[in-house]
Every structure is written in structure tokens, then in C-alpha cells.
Amino acid sequence: QVQLVESGGGLVQAGGSLRLSCASSKGTFSSYGMGWFRQAPGKERDFVAAIDSSSTNTDYAHSVAGRFTISRTNAKTTTMVYLQMNSLKPEDTAVYYCAASPHQVQRSVKLYNYWGQGTQVTVSS
Image (cartoon, rainbow, N blue to C red):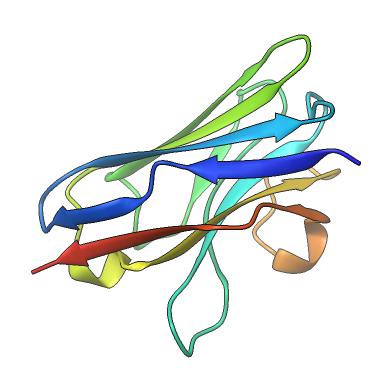
């Protein structure tokens, strides 16, 4: 089964930047919409950003618009999805998940049926 693996999380000071990566293994998601979500302790998993299969359309949560950028590459054997995070704030602290959906540019967790294991992002004040 195709899998997703995130990397790039870590500890950063407020105002700093991080770039998250998500790689598919055992296959690709070239025709799928891809998204990033995040989940803070005790809270629900929230939408962060989404991109369609051709990188034509993107969507961002209001809280990250203008600071985060989602992008992707569709290679022959691997799909890569990135989340460039700038001007990070303590409230961005969460586990960040990459996900794939047969639908394009979706905000609902329920419409994504492939998920990575998550990567921790901690922003100190």
C-alpha cells in the first residue's frame, strides 16, 4: 500500500522558519489532492493547506495564509509535498500531518484517506 512519510519538524524560535517534507513510498499520488493538517494536544486535527494534483490551485487556513506555502512535485516514482513555514508563532506548535485525497483542494479531514505518521513542530516564544 502507498504510504506517506513526513520529515522536517523540530524546535524553532518564534519568527523563524521550517520546511516540512512529505514523501510517498511504494507508489505515487500524482492524481490526488494533497493537504497538510495539524493537531495540537487536546485539540482536533485542523486543516492547514491543500494543493491540487497539477499545482494550479491552493488553499490555506486563515491563520497561516501569507506565512505558509504548500508545493508539490510529481516524479515518476514519488510524490513530494512541501510546507514552507515562515514567521512561525507559538500557536503554530502542533504535530503536522501530510494527507492525500482523491478529491482536489479539500479542507475536510474526512475526505483524505491516506495519512502520514506526523512530524512535531514546536515554536518557542
